[in-house]
Image (cartoon, rainbow, N blue to C red; front, side, top):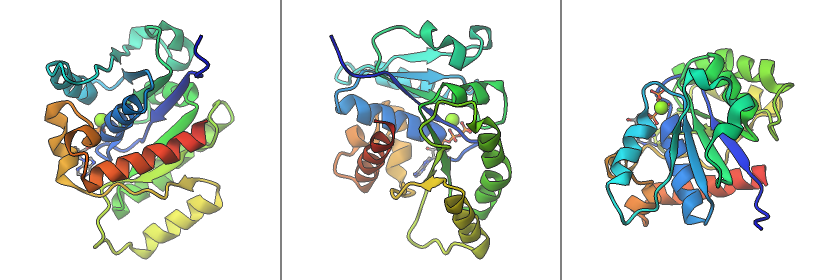
Length: 225
Ligand SMILES: Nc1ncnc2c1ncn2[C@@H]1O[C@H](COP(=O)(O)OP(=O)(O)OP(=O)(O)O)[C@@H](O)[C@H]1O
Ligand SMILES: [Mg+2]
């Protein structure tokens, strides 16, 4: 009998377009490469991961990853997680970028809440003023191992972080939000891998993007074990 415990990672933000689905598909493929049985759960009506998975399913050389479409009639994710087909040891949940019941129930279902942001001042503003307050409101009720870890996505070495962004980062660190050491660089390969239904580690194994994802996966697994 397997001794691997079931774990749930929810990738959430109340901001759209910060890289939630990109992180979901890349954590999922990295976990599959590491030998885990992964299920992706999608509750976003835009269905980015369903689209990605349709490409994946058309390539028999790839290990298939079930994507479970979570509909409103399934109820709250935290209460209904047993509805998922059995056999998984890691569920990675993708939600839409708005504060709604699906996002909050994904937070409650999570062992680890991953919150992507870009280094943009506008995205940090939403993170600090909208997403973090929701996390704080929910924190007492979650089973998560931490209040949420922040992943900086679409990083570029030329970024000069405005004082407001560094101040926001420092405030979060003081409030015990871990900001992952790994930053995902803004790289075209993240976009190109999508229409092959791949993670960047499969699409371009020697790329910087692949190294970023491996480092991020390792960091996240340390937090969840
Ligand atoms: N590190 C990156 N480098 C380059 N492009 C990226 C990176 N991360 C994400 N993208 C691109 O940015 C866009 C938004 O990413 P993604 O769809 O993952 O965000 P999201 O938070 O899931 O958005 P939504 O809220 O609409 O669901 C996509 O076109 C994606 O390919
Ligand atoms: Mg998305």
